[in-house]
Image 1 (cartoon, rainbow, N blue to C red):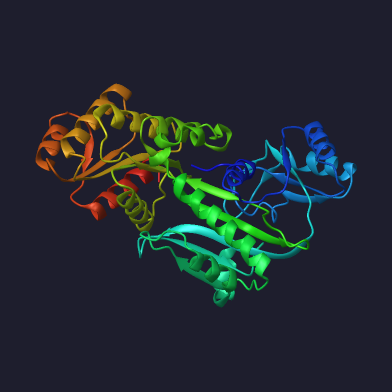
Image 2 (tube, rainbow, N blue to C red; image 1 turned 90 degrees about the horizontal axis):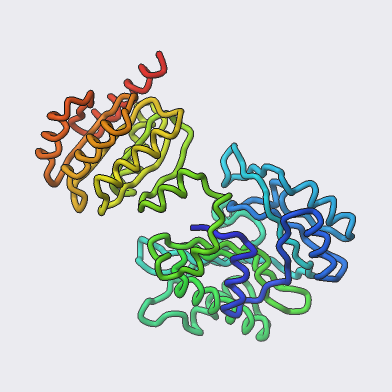
Length: 392
């Protein structure tokens, strides 16, 4: 789950991370009123969408007068921003964040992620902030440092010093403030079950303050039951109706622009399924992971969501029965096909727990189901079926 920058900063302040003052605006009038309330003579008008790269796309603009605040608000509100994270369709701006300006001495990057290779939460920091960290990693990797956190020790003064010295801070007061910043970010990451906590840029001002000029927080969907206060921050306008509906039923669903619907159990298998569909010349219409605790009703809901996409010309069901048993999936497939009247080719590949029972249920259903022996066979058949469905 993602949140907007202004929401991320509210959470950061709870953990002692310094930010600039700002106000949320839903209209041009709100934006100018916000600037007046903040005072000063410099403001930044920022588009609020769940994607990075807003500045390059024209969604972050500096204003030095009320007239400029108004002009920038008029330009950004309602605009569709296309960034490297939105895809070509872009995202429409419905909310602005008007923030006071500051005098920047230097920009840094700092982020927290889980390094799956080591199983440790890891700080990533760089003296080159304000630009895409991927670009820094590609062109000047020596300017990026990584500091892993020992889970038995947690965040320590040694970690803080490694980070501060690693990004080039030398002044004792600056190091102290940066250390407090890093400690707060780590505490936020751990206590709120984040998957990403990123500040780009973290700035050192000419007055010697260390401030989060931007903020990005992503949260683990599976941990939201512990954080109803985070769940309340969800913005339905940033997610498709189908994705919201899927999440209510415990389904992980992401809409894509292909024509082959995918119903799979397990995120890794879902990714592999999409890859092999592409390998055989097809295009997946979605990522859909029914998980390991799906019921017959959940599977039927998954089919309903897939079929609500008019671009779907064929569906591939790819199940490896472990925790999720093949017979449960088969019952769901048969129930959905009969109830919904599935009118596109349906390719099914089952393997694992209760696979023979699952295949028996499918074969005795009198449905036109295309059985597949393995994943490659399934991909070939569904790509062929989707092409036939388009009259190719």
